[in-house]
Image (cartoon, rainbow, N blue to C red):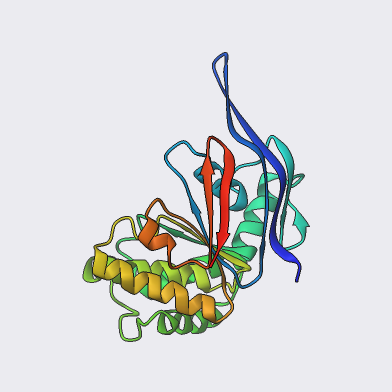
Length: 227
């Protein structure tokens, strides 16, 4: 099976004044469709830089990155935005929901950018909310939802475009332990349905839900373990 994510000898250098900081040093790995991968490491290890490159939010200084077979290295910012919307679903620690907007309209947002009709958007958004266990909460605003429910809305929004990969950045960082377990079980169930998930976390107990764990240190991969 071909890799949905392929990084080959990726380097990323940041210039700060007259100083250079090498955030990634020759990083190479692939992720096949249907994997659940946790990316781990201390602050400054390179895991967030790697995630930003995977998410087409940043470009590597060296190396090649392919997303679902496409070489994204030479794309301009408009092309990258289109690829992000079509191929990737994002889940963030802070939920990133519009506060005064019903859950269903938050979920519809990626479909607005994709140019779907209002009827198609609503149908897909309602199905995604049902998929994450929020049937009956479709028209609640964020303030009427718990933290765990808000993260479920965010996951539904990530799912609604049927992306190649869901990228989750510290998705349980703002949640208590009980809600964390609920959200991670949801991710596990989505992965069992064949959805590819790449998650950044610094918590070992959260990473344990993933079938594969990649640990970064000083801009390089230290360990890559399965099982």
